View 1: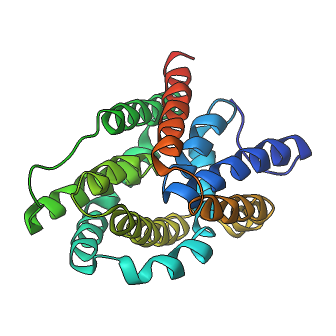
View 2: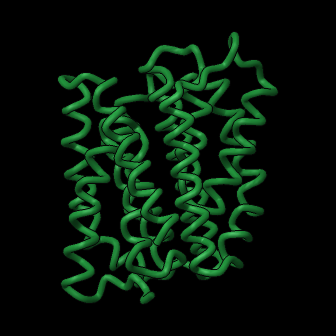
Length: 245
């Protein structure tokens, strides 16, 4: 497997196409874009070279998503899940940086399979989550996103809440924003992301941003349930391919 450097037109075309689709999913559902990009690009490139760039590219989606969701964010729960994630994030990052490429690829695929199946079965909390449950959710989500940069496990835990869909989506967007900033900072601090990665990712960011804009518009007119089922089938299919290849 070669590294994703984004210095050839073939890599740019593949990454841009994947980013456009991933951005549309992220803009519509508030999650799912990074895992689609990761599961596709991990088939061709070393995962450790893919994951930091996906974090950078996904960050631009917040330009559209965060301002439009601030009023719906459940701040007490979001604060707890974010602080808990920050506390455990370094442990997950250590696992990411010390794992073999093939093992890391399988880990990402396994997270995708577990996430998709859990959401298909509609995992829900019994009653309203208390503060300690949100802390535990943040710890689990922080460890997983630190080790794979995939946030879908946390999305399951957020959407399992009895909160309205708009509130859960706002929680998901805010949590993803906080953790993406933290990941970018830590990756940069330890030298895993350099200026060249930011420059290379800039070539792909417009495609992801355009997809996010499309997805955010579709959210207003398309059935959320139907779109989410399509997303889960897509993630499950890509994750199974990642496990068997």
